Image (cartoon, rainbow, N blue to C red; front, side):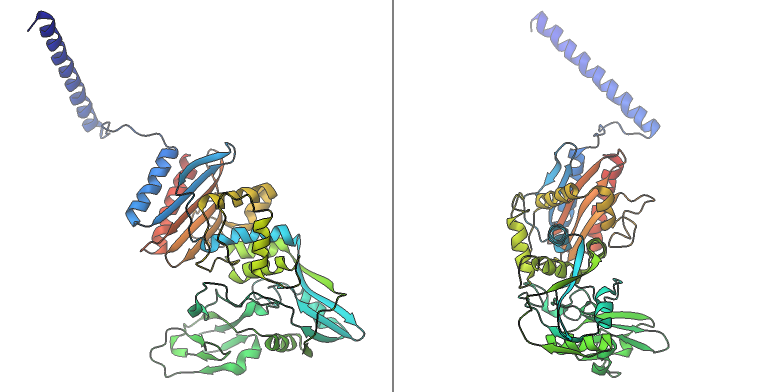
Length: 455
């Protein structure tokens, strides 16, 4: 070996020895202080956020889509499967909200009417708030109650079916799936309320005649069950809680609408079959924002469907949810990054499909339409009444948005305010998981709370 090679070898050995001593010293110091220095801490940012999302997807083996957008930068911060289609569930209501505010304006059309001599002919617009039990509204009720003319109800044309495509037929007995109709009354549900003293109240009282009691059934799980295609209800006391409030949808029809109107108004209402009068006037009801707020915060399916039905009535004599969807997709939503598969107003249909980046686009459009002071109060807020009441709890809410849940589907989309003062748009979508929705929700809340605290 030449002298120069010997010198180089000695230098390498000396360098390795120094490095070894440094590492031993570092490890000894770490052991003494309780701090690890073997892995450098990665600064929190887009890479860390994406890693968190990937970890959730790998843990659950489900299909996860994620998009986080910074409007100040005008670009996505994080994307994962943002261009892939997901079943959105009630995230669909964000689109119904946007479409309805574009077409309806500031007020809800409560009904249409025409006065001919001593007769008042009236018909529905799709307004879901007439004697609705959770939305206080007496405008149309007082109008019809106090008119001096004889009342004649006309069933206006509505081409949408009571259930939309791919709704669960076997959910007909549950509060969240009432039928769509041209003139909803009491939210198209019967409400049963009971106390520990065995008292039972039924609203509308009209349905008392159709309720029977069964004390013998031994395999029943629900306290109140409606027959599949009849407005016949069975009460099973053995399966009722001490204090209960149960809502069961009823089957709608023009004949039943006229009977319920007469029963509610305490005056005769006659169903007539004739063409709609050409000299129609519109009676306006609640402010649109009142209905939007209820629809978004508690995820009211009937309100979402009927808002889209009413929207179609602004440009067509035949009311149809599908017409409103087709119209808005061809107009204000023609520039979405991925064309939605959009079939209903509420998101109950499993045929709906949206991509996370398209949901970001609708959040951007909503932001452009309204300042946050008028937008955020309409949405579900962390720790406040609504679908986010048990999550994102804080003295000052920092998440505003919409959740969406079906079997094997759980999503959240909306706006998040970080501690650094940024307002970010996000869409977090989970499909095809074999776990409880609460587990999926907890993962989303953990990740989004970290974004709020560190980004």
